[in-house]
Length: 528
Ligand code: ADP
Ligand code: ZN
Image (cartoon, rainbow, N blue to C red):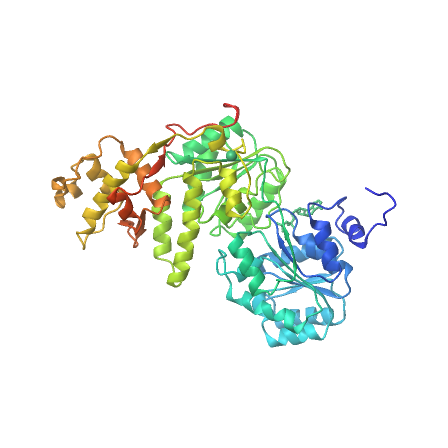
């Protein structure tokens, strides 16, 4: 570095206001570009430091930085944090009464705000537009910009109106930021916000210190306990569960087994939630058992593991949640246990969710991508980064599939047996049969349901004795992941897809991954 180089305004603010010595990654380039009046699209993983990319330009440029954020619940915290640093920040949203709102408006008009946070639905109002016109705008920051994209996991129609900003204020720089970098989302943000001429800053999404592991779910709580005892004794970590009930049960289970765990979910009293969160941040070695309601805006550098006891709904979600591990750069674990039941349950949730068919289809696509990450025999990191449009060559040596290359087997015949059973059952139109019943037929079990429907007379009855029950469940899971089978309705009925016919006809082979009998341990076992 050149010692004679004058210290830029941006660096002064970084040191004086934020107390940091140096910029991270591309922060400096982004900040200088926006200070100079340029538009920017910033794709950076959670925790990489996106906020400074608009906060510093807002402080350096004359006028007020307008920050558009959908996270109303976090605005107060963000504003408090900025004020604690001596910046003049405020927000306008639906939680305020008219008096409070008018006070903030007056501050803005008097030029006494460095940053003003707004929810997108506010910004749309003509009255807000007029207000902004009467003051001086330093920049527009569009946080969580993926909300503009239909392909994003939390699309918000309000965001579409943001395309009007550039027409109304062509000279005000805009910086759009998101942690979702799939090529489809990237393209949609660019198009919808008119950022074709903006500079695009795409960070490296790899988190090399995180070891990714995905194991078949057997006795999840016990598997979790084994992991914590053998590899993460005394470490701080987060355990994600799908439901509030399983959060409670899992936290109780861990506490009973001598692990300092706390629950966190939206059903808990706000005070309890705040207290548990504060303890997790402050004390060492606590395990937070939580729904995904926990974690947004949490910045704890020494989270040593993130465990998922249920399958995340999308790769974006998985990446964001696991990304809370190891922000200090030290080795950390991302561990996920998943089973057939997860797939069936999430499909049922999608099938019965509100919203139109297109919305359900999108959710289905997101789930499929997550499933193929789970079932891959290739490097998990490579798969994960490819999802975000980032190519990487070779094996990473720090994920379960790299450390213990999964065996594959030719599952074509098994797939044919299973699919023909599903096909046969589909002829009984009024009846709906799930994975359990299909497996019973293949194994030749005369359960009450089998005899009731006289399924012991089917030609496929008992043809699947070469595999055991858990192996058949693995077959169903992998057929679902490969799009050769799907789940319909609210009862988890298995149905064929268009692609199934190729397998039944014998024109398509079905390679399958052999589930390890015991969850593989990666650390310390065989080299890469
Ligand atoms: P993101 O919005 O990308 O998820 P944040 O902006 O919340 O990330 O930043 C994550 C954490 O990193 C914050 O605590 C922030 O203060 C810190 N941080 C950001 N930039 C730097 C930097 N240049 N040096 C040190 N810490 C930083
Ligand atoms: Zn790998």
